[in-house]
Length: 443
Image (cartoon, rainbow, N blue to C red; front, side, top):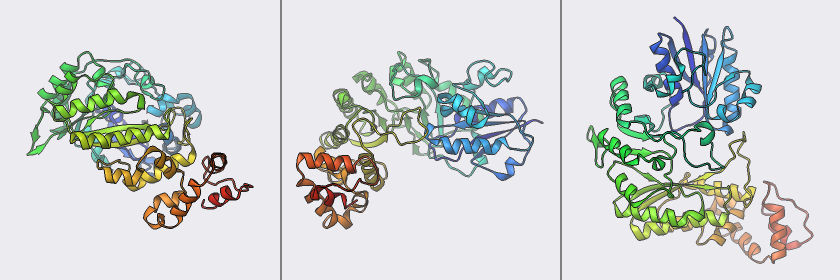
């Protein structure tokens, strides 16, 4: 019997590799033995395989991904190594040059991408959940039906990879059919995750909601005595949300309602959507807040603060998840946006380190973490990282002294200080201005 190895590099990720899970279904339907591994396994590397398939995720995982591909390409017998997924689709030439692997781009919905009979049907296959039992790693939302009600996106956002990975917008896939097929093959799951990129853009949005409810995920639905949840994994587009759509969402077991808030210019649309959500009883919300893109630190602060104010007014619980922008063409996370600096980004990371990446719902917590206003926030993220990370220890001593010195700077002194301190980890010492040099000494 032929045998293949399916590989996911050893990065942390929330969702299991659906592409590999569908490949497993294909191979087992063709009586080919399948083994799944996450990371590097010396024992599996020493086995003889007919082919090896490696998935990829984000471009900033380049180093780990390339190392994993090279590791298995030296398996016994030198089997062909196929690589697909997001990174592979965004940087196919670079990945092939670095590894010599056969790079497969996009979805497996076209003939001969893998050179296998009927490989155009792989994208639509039922994922094989059983392969997840081969590894010790537990995906945080593993007990879920993973489905697509749509594919692609109608928007062409410059910062997003979707138009490259999924260039065609498909407005409807039956949720009921997918859930039934997964249940039949792999048993009941507790929750439902829609892996769509922009569900609310579909002209068949009402049909999608009807299917979610029919699949057993209406509001208040339970399984085994436990509440079921529907998670639209991507933040819903506030520009396309209407009161009718929000009302329809409230008919499902959605938890939480995710709305993207990537630009302060979308404040009106975002706030309107949150108010509709509160009106229809959707009070647990989550939103992704992109920063380090075209925004400013002050814009970023105002978006976070708005959620605190809405929580107080509406009785909602909005948890924000700041997401640092990194261009899809980069293989590291060193990008610094036009209005940002290295130290600003590091300052935000220090704050999020203390909050575990989440901006909470309470005003007192927010003010403590991010400051009472945008100007105070910019000052805070300009501080030495030690003062931010260990604020309680330093706030009455070193940090207080730093703040006094910072406040005393004239506009020209502040400009010099910023040019010397904000753009790299180590400040540029040697200022002829004693006040500037004294402030730089804190770093």
